[in-house]
Length: 237
Ligand SMILES: [Zn+2]
Ligand SMILES: [Zn+2]
Picture 1 (tube, helix red, strand yellow):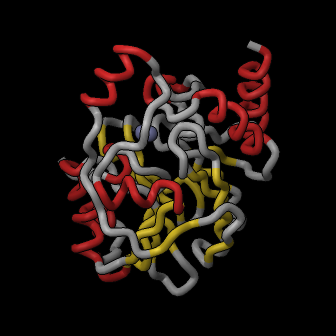
Picture 2 (cartoon, protein in one colour; picture 1 turned 30 degrees about the horizontal axis):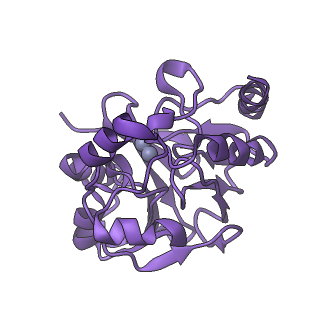
């Protein structure tokens, strides 16, 4: 069945590459009518992203760059295929670059035997050549202005993206919204769960109207307030 992108703000589409909103990628239209992508989903679902683009009349050649929030298989998995199909440049934070290129999962924090099992089970990810390193505070000419927010913890180089013109925050896996419930990623899948909570604080401080997630549906109503309340609770517990 074809995947239909959902326009969540002018020139910004959410593409559910798995389920209704289990894993989301994003298509951002630029001022020159090229597009930029955020995340490429699983290796097996990368075609869905390309077919979603064609449904809004965007050809593979119109993709200018691919931003990857972090080097996990459900975000980076399809990147190599999408890079080949589009010729676009891939971007990831410097601290996740080595993992993305080597196909080695970023380290997780769980100590002891469980940590060893989890580390072995998820030790490999599909690799992708990275063209450009992102850094905190970068302002990219994407969608009228995109700010890179380094939010490490889930992985060392995890980034969230703030689209200033459309007033949308793409959290990545820094905060999730599975089944309309805000949460942090399972600590077993985090490089440093405490750091994840610490760095999420800045997501409650920047300006946006809509919160968009790589896992779960967007929040359109009082998004910033919802995230702030969630972050505040996490700090108390
Ligand atoms: Zn992740
Ligand atoms: Zn994820």
